[in-house]
Image 1: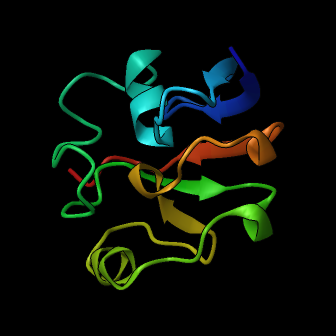
Image 2 (image 1 turned 180 degrees about the vertical axis):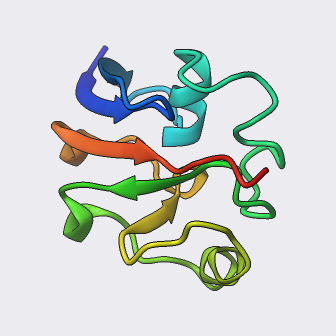
Length: 111
């Protein structure tokens, strides 16, 4: 099993350094949900299909290491609240070994 360390700052501003598996084909949104770092029903509402922006996060480092934004991700971020230059949908970020040390902040809920 191969894990990477990722620091996730929750919506209350608390930082959590967690182990994320690289061998389970998970994305960042799924990892956030599995560690219960956002209240249930407030993140990943569409199930990771880039059809909502509930999993929006801010990439604090390693932005250049992430895959390019797809058209669907760009389109969804165009409709989201609290979008910044470093905004990404966490459901579109696969967990890979290159992300060891990644730091992200979960964006505020849109409600």
